[in-house]
Length: 413
Ligand code: PLP
Image (tube, rainbow, N blue to C red; front, side, top):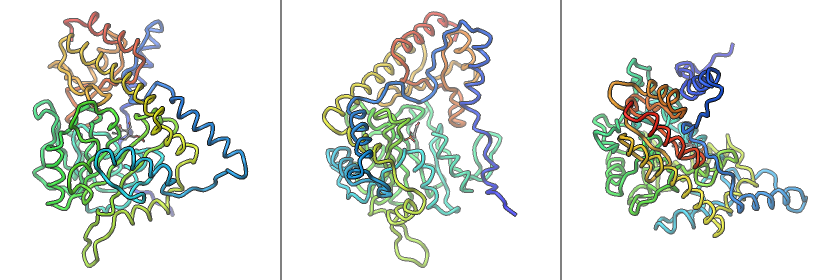
């Protein structure tokens, strides 16, 4: 008789975005005339850029001819894209990689979730808190999280609080984990680490033989100088870190689906009674078994964002979203809020006034300003007391939303 992975049953229903949708729906039913502005979900709104569309069309034409048709591609991705990524994303930052250290995927979420296939159940996992929920939930499924406690934490996971008190800079944990997830620039706080701050983590990992899972899905949004775009800018990182990248927010690929993961060959792990094991070889084995590659036309589309025209186009869109971030940041500061993030990331993390929790703040913002955001508690226990707004909406709507908060809510939050 079939039995299920009971770890899956430990996961509570992911209620954050469905709860938000439910509350917005109820509000709209009661106030059909209300023009609700959504600054909640982290999805892009601008269409794909012309260079991407052109590459997609061309690739579709190739697929229509028997001479140029492509069937199964390499599980790891086509070399034309892997090599372009190395040349454009890494070489200019002084990082050399070999083609077979880059694995093309259908987006970062799958790889971030699937990477845990390689980890034994015994690993102690650490996450910064608040956190992109996939890191925690995929480890619950893998049996590494223990039990859900009343305070919202999982008993076996090490939580590293990132709050205004420590300027959202994670401190090295007292309990040494085996695996640590770092997301920089951070979703949801929008914060980044300097090179010297990130170096502390790499040195700590080297010293304690820890694996760092480095999520750089928002690297393209970094505006300030001297912020590392890749963990491999730090010496020694290739021995301890896997890096995940995504074209979703970089180039509007949330619907098209493409990303990549770097697994350096220098990353090896000593197992009892065995030689050092190459993580690159293991991941390659995993991908060849369970993944059949990203669509050819999508990989051609991803390649196109690295052309001169493609770069110009996607940078224009990132500028547009970052202008939204500025509008939100400065507008809310004027309205008296304490604001974080929004400088090197499309997320603004605001401190909620004392005496109200993040769901109550959500309701107030919805009913008084018809603006939707995301309650901080949805990202983990240390997210309580905070609220996330995103910079991905239409600019006119973004201005309207901030104006409403400034006018209608003045003095009341
Ligand atoms: N990592 C972070 C921190 C994210 O916020 C997201 C998406 O919102 C992802 C990864 C997933 O990206 P993708 O669309 O490539 O799966």
